[in-house]
Image (cartoon, rainbow, N blue to C red; front, side, top):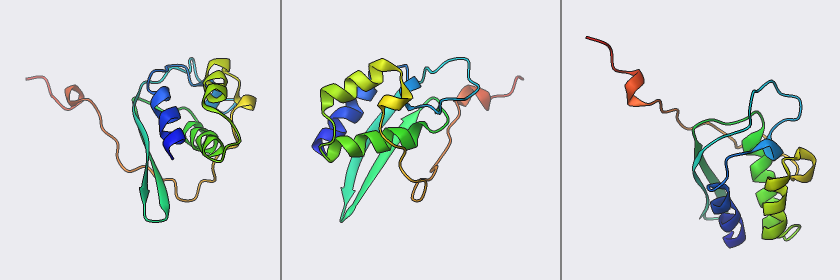
Length: 117
């Protein structure tokens, strides 16, 4: 889990997440700002938390799958960093299965709630 958290922390300094996006998707860019990305262990369960200004299609599942591969020793932190730099989805790990994945909340900037008086 320590290696997975180190790699997750690295993601906070990145802005291009093309390597974690579905290949054939209709977006104008792959830039996202991650605010949080970390693992916690709760008993026998590992839980991944991620918060960003936006997510690409398939992004979270691809990140989780790639981080799990790192945690299993199938890749190294330097290889993980190279995957991110490559922008190539085929370099990243397999997408994590969808079961257990859920959206816990959506937050919008307070400015969207203010009405003009």
